[in-house]
Amino acid sequence: MAEPISIQCLCGAVHIELSGEPAARANCHCGSCRDFYGTPMLSATAWPASSVRIAKGAVVTFAHPAKQMSRAFCAGCGETMFGVNRLDMRVVPNSLAARVSDGDLPASLRPTMHLFYRHRVVDIDDRLVKYLDGWDGSEFLPA
Image (cartoon, helix red, strand yellow):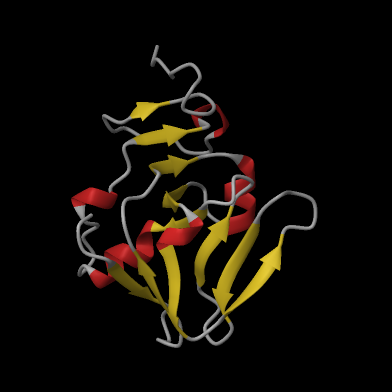
């Protein structure tokens, strides 16, 4: 991504600037993401901490009580702006970038894989590689 992208929460109180390239673009099916983000699958990009800057407002952070992850959200509308995973990456939900692009996620941010597909709660019929666990493991091969 050549130009930084600016995302904001629903109420507009928090603006975040993403710069550079995401380290990963994925749909994650792990139980931690499902539980922590309240979704059957988290479609997101992972960014180095230095690539995510709060340009306006402030976020409130909630640390998971048992796992090495936290979530930063707007105190006004409650929208999750990013999470922080055990690798200290900033995990930004793709819905935020799609919103600023009139609902169409830019090609440079579209997922390139599924992670932890063995733990899925819904089957996905697309052409992306589906890793059973992390991206260094085995792939899901349909029967």
